[in-house]
Amino acid sequence: MVVSEEIIVRIREANDIVEIISEYMVLKKLGNNFKGLCPFHSEKTPSFIVSPQKQIYHCFGCGEGGDVFSFLMKIDNISFVDAVEKLSKRANINIPHKLSLHNDKSLRERKTLYDLYEKAMNFYSDFLLHEEESVLAHKYLKSRGISSQIINKFKIGYASKRGDVLLKKFLNKGFSVDLLKKAGLISFSEKKKKFSDFFWNRIIFPVFDAQGRIVAFGGRVLDSGLPKYINSSESMIFNKRKILYGLNFTSSRIRESKKVLILEGYIDVLTGYQYGLENVVATLGTALTKEHINILQRYAEEVVIVFDSDNAGISAALRGINQLIDSNLKIKIVSLPQGMDPDNFLRKKGKEAFDNFLKNSLSFIDYQFKIASKDVDFSEVEGKIRVVNKILPMIVQIKNEVEKREEVRKLAERLSLAEETLLLELSKINKSNKFKTKEGFLSDYKEEKDPLIERDILQILLTEPVYIKQVKEKICVNDFTGEITSQLIKYVFKLASEGKEVSFHRVMDYFGDEKINQIITRMILNEARMRGNKSEILEKLLENMCRCKITKKRNELEKEIKAMLSGEKEKDLNKLREYNDLTKQLKGSQRELRVL
Image 1 (cartoon, rainbow, N blue to C red):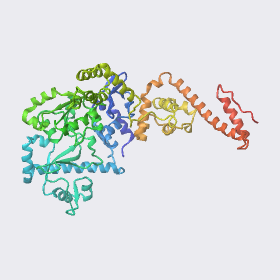
Image 2 (tube, one colour):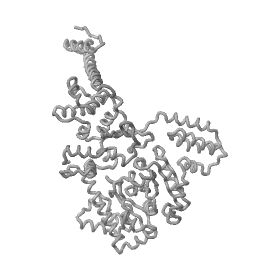
Image 3 (cartoon, one colour):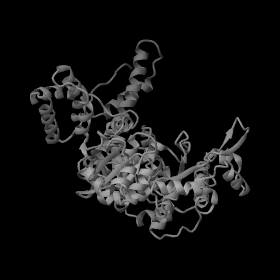
Image 4 (cartoon, rainbow, N blue to C red):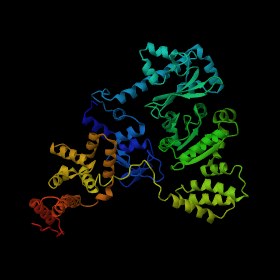
């Protein structure tokens, strides 16, 4: 990208990382740093550290780390170029050179899709507002009580029943068939042997990401045809597991209220918003996923799942609960009356009645008990065992011991069992889970790849480069054997030899690698390891590293000498002398081979 290092530094310094991250999650002061629940994985104990002095963050749970640029890239799913542009605008810093995308094919393709979808959104919206053909669409929306204000705000549109209006319009604008097909706006009909619009004779709901960019569309039929709803195919900018419909409009209200209502679909969100429920979202035809939950944790402390009371709604709620249990979110469930969904309930009974249902929502344990105990005969032991086997594995995941004990008490009372019996069963589950670990998290580096001593030396140099000269006098680049540490020390020494400033931000900018960001931020924020006089600590580290180097060389020579003694190799007096010299250098070691 065509932008100077000086500008990058200015933009970083003008955007305080604590302020930026606080816009996405709750941070609490902890000594010199801030701490919060990681937005990149589900956790109940905060392990996400932000340093205002060093302007970096690191999660000691999942390993994510970096600076203000990498945070935005990760949380908003944007490129470095986009992050630079966003932060430069926020700080009112003009970038003297246009950021160049011509060398990045992926960035070009993503930008092309965003631009194309925005044009398609405006096309569908204009068609609904201005074309006579859309009269049935207006009639449908009116029947569902959707106001013109909501239609305009959410950019609702209509796709013509002729089936080729968008295709012709966009071809005339110069867009290629290949691009329209790749974007999922048209499809090829084997029956008709020609291309036509993917969406036709449907109400169109633009799907936005959290930053308000169009990433997909949903379409609903105007009659009883099937499928009732269809969505755009997944693409490089659209993954339905990571998108919550309406979040771009409701995120600020969710953050204020610390509560989010999860509804079932497009119309539910529109109606809810129209009735003053401005903290609503919906999944796109999926159960709640881990990705959804990680997103929600940035905004809310409580999740209220509002689904139909039919079997499909219950199943969807249960799948969502299973994902939510391992998060730090408080979970509530609302079961609407039989045959009603949030949309028609609000229109028929109003917001006050809906609010009363919300007040009577169930905790996830109570809701699971309600479902698990359906058609169960508690007078029989088998029925009680079935419910216990369903509920106890959920109770065991509760971190708060008081809350956990209370749930055990309630379950014992409901089943007419002794608390001690359930506590005994609970301990069995605890033991079986003792050795289970979460997968997918960045574990500590393998020491044989990145030795701890090398990381400790780098930790000092990256925070206090004044000691670089002291290090270079004792060891060289080739003495570092770690997969990552060897790359880092090479660049640090290069900067120093060129008379350039050495800083961990500069090193992170140079490599631009997610894994290296994680390693560096972990080093820098793991301050407990480096308390005391840095010069003395460093001297001991260098001494130990030199001993390790000598020991390694001596061990290699010892193998060769043993081969000489066994007759496998010819005697080499120089190697014998070198071995003895190295042995003398190792303090406390008196071993010498006197085979001369």
